[in-house]
Length: 393
Image (tube, rainbow, N blue to C red; front, side, top):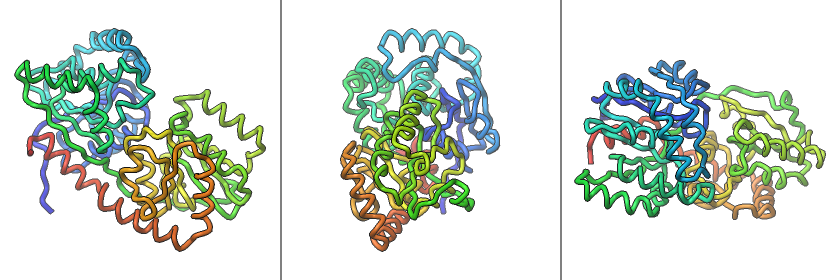
């Protein structure tokens, strides 16, 4: 197998040290055998991402900045600008650190804004888009601001799906930024879709009885506990299925009020024995493998759906809401099932169908596993990123 090895030093930049899908994907990139020797990971706070990266032998540099973290999805233009600039003023040391690197690789929108303001002529700026920028949870000012800055200042854009690339290209800020870029004589921005690498990790055997699972069937939903991930609909779908236990795996730190709403619903409907809130788990693959079905009930504005891919890799049938990303990676009936977002009755019907169609579910899971192993293979994804950021057309 031919291999491209990184020849230029790369500074990977991430604004948060919390572990979400974007951060786990970033670790898979930086830890790539052909990237890690000349890479460093810069994080704007200390936390789990830094700890896990260091365990992988990645060079980690932490530069705390609460200012950057204060920018939210629905922040207005002026707040974003003022907070970003306030944070930038504290980064003279970071600018000096960047002088040692040829490529600045931003893994989030906030870090992209930071790297844009610290841009210098001798640096290649890369932005990895992992969101649907046109999603409803972004304010119109943020959509415009992010797409304008990105299209004007970033040299190379990697989108984690065709859906996220299309959303970026459709923004009015991108339209204006590209024209300003041409007027200023900047080189045309390069854009490429590269799916996230999702490695298949060895799993440990988990005794389902120790988790209190007493039903014939077990279903799982994985990811941060947020309104957008919509775990409450998964609970509503199975609440009248006495033969099903639902495992909910994910951190609740981001939206504690939504977690409280879920807990209240569980208590009100006496579901404590059949809905298990397990919190954040590093070894999600072990929990996936005790499930008969994995659900993805997101609100429909998902760029890819990492947990869908993980379920595919471990041979577990998937039912997903028909958002942009899931529709892109699931071939209906062959590699998974889709349902209209928030149509709980349709979700419930598909759950019942798969639980009682064992041969069909196994064949679908087998097809999905083959697709995922071929499409999201880490070495191949890493090589695609190297070729793109180092200049191959």
